[in-house]
Amino acid sequence: MSLSALAQDKVEREYKINLDAVPEKAKEFVYESGVLPPKVRVNWYREESADEESIEAKFKHQGQRYSIEFSESGKFQDV
Image (cartoon, rainbow, N blue to C red):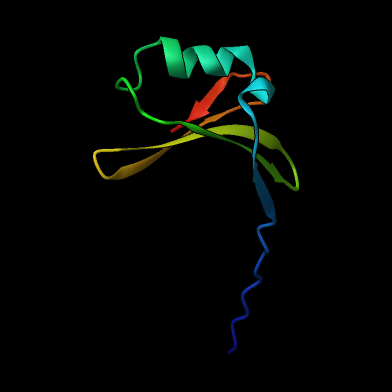
């Protein structure tokens, strides 16, 4: 008996974007909600996959890397 596995290639493209391109809801969540400690530098990215697009805020705090993902409209999705 032989088993075969089908592999799906995950195709994603991620690129850095300017703060101007970030939805207001996402900026408010990150900068005004108290989620981040003061003076943490945030890098913003747009991620495109085969079926969706999202915005990510990436930052480093106490040696750990974090990513907060939002929809294109700025709605929180996950950390």
